[in-house]
Length: 272
Ligand SMILES: [Zn+2]
Ligand SMILES: [Zn+2]
Image 1: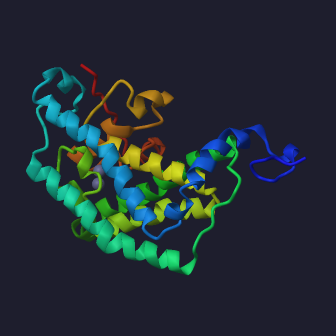
Image 2: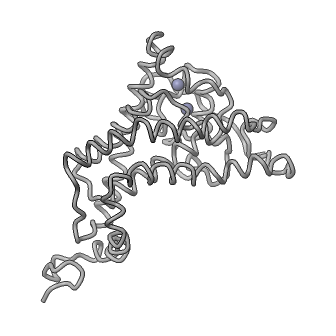
Image 3: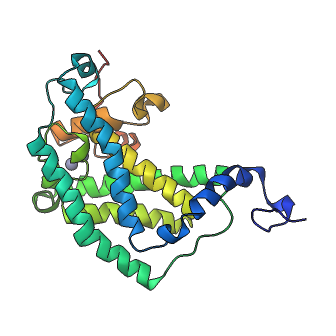
């Protein structure tokens, strides 16, 4: 007897896989779009802008609802249109001019196929966590190097530090080299671990969300660093300190590498 979803013998179709199969079947109904060469760029831009928009709206509302300012790390700062628009323009420009040709080449070299079966839930969670830890490590090394070597800082990373009080749309205000490095770290881990496409999509979405949250300037009671125990996760409060002090908190998400190398500056920003 075989499973109606994946034509595997039913004993092989674990309950964990069945749990994600309806979601994966729904994703696969968009197969033509997902396998098109335009998908990576469209997916990346829409996810990024979609995550940034609520924070842009909050920044506008802050002027009319001062109570919202209690959640801001810098209560008196709201980005102006002159700060927001160049950031948005740069993201669109770089994705169309640089990211799209690279993904097009990759698509032409090896057009992908989507498997019929969903991944097991536990394996998906393990792979996403591993991808996050590896990405955190790779970016920590890259980031530390680009602060310690003045030429690397001036040439490639300084542009990201142009806004001392960060805001969501400043997340991808990066040099092309930094954008490519982040893209390579993102893709390499997924490939090395042999992740299922649904796992890769989940990791990409989570990675974009966490990077936007890091730069949002909002320290909510539900911010990720408040949900992860034992101070393992630095998040927005830590990354904001990096933007204001330059010499600390080089890891984008977790705190262990900064602890080990003595570059951790604890954040103490209460929710007022
Ligand atoms: Zn930096
Ligand atoms: Zn940053």
